[in-house]
Figure 1 (tube, rainbow, N blue to C red):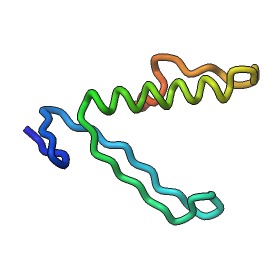
Figure 2: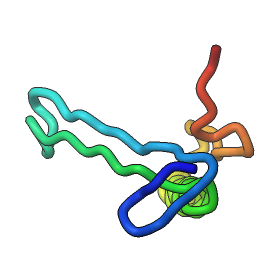
Figure 3: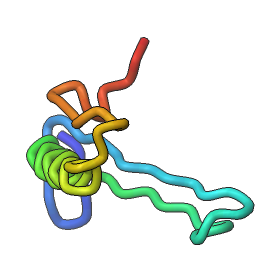
Length: 72
């Protein structure tokens, strides 16, 4: 069992970003630990946001169920 803040979870995931030079968030670094359910909710929200951004841009593909899945 892992502990995230005040919560315990069997499986934990993380959401990370590190922004480099020239970015609007230059030098900022983020790391969020998430339980499996919260990670799924965050991923779904990001997928939906991306769908709205590219909705009428036919040059870009709509995100599907593989959105965010690492390619190994």
